[in-house]
Length: 388
Image (cartoon, rainbow, N blue to C red):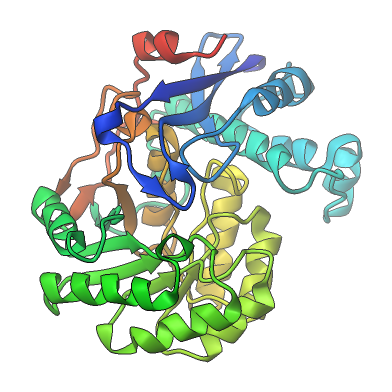
């Protein structure tokens, strides 16, 4: 079996005005991602997803070009089943043979950012292809799933203090969720206004629904610590990205100042960044985005770090159906896997790209046993929203 070609497309899907939301990223008018297709000479196809930005919107031309003009030609003719070898070739570039021979990395200059996103999409597609080849779900290839279903939390929460309770309660009712997440941070102005919204949410939800908060890295260390003091008695499930991901020591300072668990990682690339989070004692929960962090292969290594440090793994799943499925497979197979993010914002790439649907029932999502990632791509959807 040999790789015939690797081809990426930018999917740009407009969101109807009535379904758009406003956050610190602005008004979200589209959902964008890169669809990666790995085809073998025998006709077997694997699908993956890469993202240029963590948020919904992005200009993905550069990421598409990187896959189609660099990594795709690099892997043409290779055996797609040798995923570890291909990862080393992509991550280490022209020194890939040294990495394979010597047993340590010789990374290319672009060892973060868009280069790793490109590797993520290809790696994901290779695992999907291998699962289809062996007629086994990816979680089986990773060592098996811990359970047939996993808990999920509803992710959204942009309403003001007067309406946030009703908004989050509607999430609970939608899928029987036992936990929800809301956004806080710079969009509220002073942390006291975020705290007012959190208190309103807790009052509406009652004590038995888990409530998490996500600041998208928009607070300073001082502001984040102040916010934590203001909501210390709200029994938060976690406080996500309190400060910018580039300030790991600052995040560690926030964690040391509060009993609220700190979650981070959606903006991080490779196991080395998550190693630093662990060593700085900056986070309680790791949240790698599999369309960004290095794909399924790297996410399993990240999960191993989490397990070794007795931390939890809760992948960032504000993604399309492919990266959602990949994160679900990893969480189900990893000892540290804990909970799944389920977007309640408008997300056509999660809800319409695949023929299969991920349905939350009583706050849980079934871990499917279909081969590969278990996703059947709707070609009509792809053709309609591909950017020429």
